[in-house]
Structure formats: structure tokens, C-alpha cells
Length: 602
Image 1 (cartoon, rainbow, N blue to C red):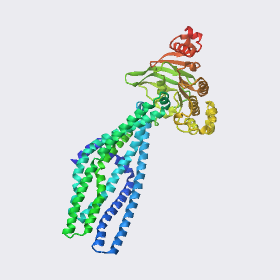
Image 2 (spheres, rainbow, N blue to C red; image 1 turned 45 degrees about the vertical axis):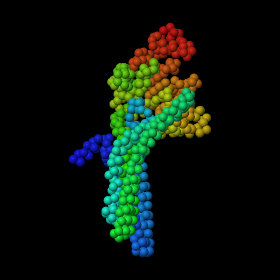
Image 3 (cartoon, rainbow, N blue to C red; image 1 turned 60 degrees about the horizontal axis):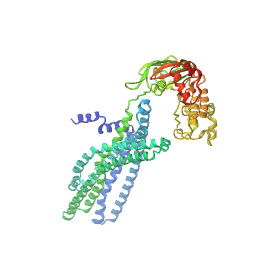
Image 4 (spheres, rainbow, N blue to C red; image 1 turned 180 degrees about the horizontal axis):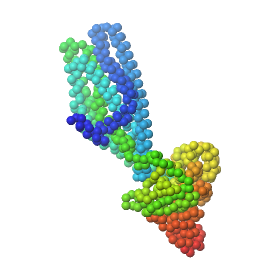
């Protein structure tokens, strides 16, 4: 009956027994030898504590009953030795547990990172990055904390309590009964408190995540915050988040420590009863004072481990919130599983084909509608059209950030879904409008395209991207820190660094996503020249809103509402007088550019 009930508890993956069972089998078991050593050291410390309590009785009797000074000296030296042994054992087990805990935290951080990095782009699109940072720090540490809590509870506290209770029973079995008056009322109160602990601890995690989210958004968007004078808004948001977390933390403190007054009162009552009974025994029945003091010492020493064991369930339920957070991430099915077992994609000409491709980011919201086209190898093909038409989705599908709902995408006649993602992406260089630079030096960021690149290769790529000159103007040159997200550099400089790392990658396919959209004329000229070198003799797909930047393209595809509505060269499309010509005339007017006669007459 009991076994079947426990089995049902283990089947509920969210229950405390199931989580503890999983922690012990998946994580603690691998460290069982170290835990066994730590447990043995705790046993030594518990035994030394119990012996010290027992010897107090002999010291009292030797001093006040037998008047035996040599005996007192001997007992004092033994007691000192026991305390030294206890100190050494406590130190050794604490270091051992810390090392085991650090190993488990490191393993969980790796497991969580692996679980996250195996997700596709869609997984992260509706989540805030601060959530994952909180989960990585809180969840990874929670497993170690819970396991160490269990080990210390049963190794240090339970063993100490057993030893000290044994001393109490040996010295006076009847008086030992008084110590147990504390247990029933205490467990009754603690049982009611546990139900509230989980919800409060969960709210604390959520509140901490919101604080991190506000801080991260404020720092990352500090230019917008300053430009729009949002300081008071962000301050108010942080204040609300902090106040909410403070409220939940105070609530946790009230609930978690609610048992302390009752425990102290019951403990005082038990001591009072023991004092009365012990005094009666010494005065009226002739019992030795050593027995009484030994019992009292054992009782006082047993009080703290007993109180910690009584609070164990509260501490466990609080810590298991973090464990649930850990397993939530680790157990998330991979949305971009490793497919390195598939054959590598071999690209020679780099001819790209979309064959009746359909795709939707969300149900009932079609983004790509039966798109069919071919990209000629070694040529530049431009995608133009209104925002939201599906241009960037084409690049996302080609990079396999998302998989098409139907149809196929081929490179050199090979369906990319039949080959490994890694082999595909290694042969594609991507430069976007919003350039992301990693925290590190300029050299590090260029070498992202080729981690084993030599210094000469890095400098050559920078020169080809028109980046070498401004890099050398920095005092530290290529060792200049890029800053978080590259904020040390201007937009044009970041773009040229991105082009340099694309150049050094030497990929057969180049994807450009509005790479000059936010640049001034001078920066645009330099970036355009750098991109021309990047795209030379390579298959290039470029997305552009500023149409004058792609007039030289070998082919222009007009994408609207998820479909190709026009196709041709710049001059051909102008003469056709369709959607492209309308877009071009509108931009020529807005940008005060001369409208070509062919476009005006179309």
C-alpha cells in the first residue's frame, strides 16, 4: 500500500518526492563516493559532539563529588581533543560539500546552456532574455543546494540528534520524555506552513526576473531612455518590481519564521520541566549532579539540529522551486535537434531554388505563399517590396532558422532539409542591418567568421572591408574592446566589422539584410564598396528598402504579401511600369533624386 502510494508520487513529475528522487539519481549518484566521505566526516563530528555532552557529566562528578583533579585534567584534555576532531571533520566535510556543489552547479549550467542553444529562433521570439539568465543562475544552483540540504540534514543534524538523544536516554530515560513534548505541536504548525512556501518562492523568482528584465532593457536601450526622457518611467517600473519582490520576500520571512516563537516557547517549556524533574532527582533521590548536567548539555546541543530538521521541509520546498525551474529548461524538447548525422551539404555553384515554398509563423497567418524562384550562381539577386511582405523570411528559411510548412529549398539541386544545418550555415555569410558584435576585441569579432584565422587574414579582411583605417586610429588597434553589442563603434564601423567577418569566412553564399539601411551617405558609400568586394563571384541575396543600392543587381524580385509579383533587372522593371517602378518613383521623390525618364514614362 505504502509502496504504491510512493510510486504514484514519483509519477507526478512536479511533486517534491519525484523531484528529490530525480536529483538523487541523476545528479547526486554520480558523486556518491564524495558524498559518502562527507557523510562519514559528519558522523565523526556528530559522535564528537555527543561524547562531549556525555563527558560533561563525568567532569561535574569528578569536580564536585569525587574532588579528583587529575581526573578533571584528563577529561579536559579528552574534551579538547574531541573539539579539535569535531572542528577538523566539520571543515573537511564543508569543503567536500562545496566542491561537490560547485561540480553540480557547473554541470547544470552546461546542461541548461545546451538545452537552450538547441532551440530554434521561434523558441526565443516571445520570451525575454532575462528569463533565461535567471533560470541559468537560479536553477543551476538550486539542485546543489537541495542535495546539500538533504545530506547535511541526514548527515550532520540527524546523526548529531541521534547521538545526543542517546546520551539523554543513557543519563535519564524518564527525563528524556520531556524533550519530546516539542515535536507534535511543531510538526502540526510546519505542515500548514509548507503549503504556502512554494507559491511565495515562485513569486520571488518571477519578481527577480522582472527586476533583471527592467535593468537589462534600461541599459541596452539607454540611448532611447535618454532621448525620450524615460528615466522616470523606467525608475517607476523598477520601483514597482522591487516593491513587489520586497513584499513577497517579507511574506516569505513571516511564513518561514512563523514557527520560531512556538519552537522557542515549547523548547523553554521542555527545559523547565527537565530542570524541575532533574533538580528533584538530585535533591530527593540522591542522583549525581553529573547525570543532570550531562543530560541538560545534550538537550541544549540537540535543540539546534532538531529545529533545523523541523524546518527541513520548508527549506526543501523553497529550494525545489529552483529545481523545477532547472528541469523545465533541461526537459524542454529540442526544437533544433543536432542533425550532424545527416550528410554534409556540398556546395559548388551555389544555385539556390525555392520550389512552391509555403510558410507561416503563426496559424492562419500565411507569410510565404507558394513561392517559387531560382537564384543564379555567382550573381546578385535583390529582394524588394513593402515591409512584412516576406523578404527576411526568405533568408530565415534559407538559413533554416525555420522550416517551411511545404515545398522544398534546394542548393545545387540538394534539398537542404536532407543535410545537416551546420554544413549549410558554414557556407553562408550573413550581414544584417542590426549588427551584433560580441563582447571582446575587434580582432575577436572579425575572427568569428574564421576562429583559426591568422593575424594576416584578419588584417586583410579588415582592409577589404574598409575597416583597417579606423581600427588603427584606436590606441589599441585590433585589441580595442568593441563594448557590449559593439556600442563603442559607430553604425558604419559595426557594419564594416560585420563585412570583414563575412569576408574572412569566405562563404559561397552571401545574405545581406538591409545592410546599409541606417547609414549616412559617407558610411553607405564605404559599406557599399566593401560589400561589392564581399559579393564578387559569390551567390548573393540582398534585401533592400533603399532601391538605389541594388540598381546594379543581376536580378530583382519584388516580394509582396508572401509572393513574387515581379522579376527582372532594374531597367526592365522600370520600363514595365509595375510595382517596382512605383516604389522607385516614390523613393526618388522622397529622397530628391532625379527620376529616370524610363521610370517616369512607365
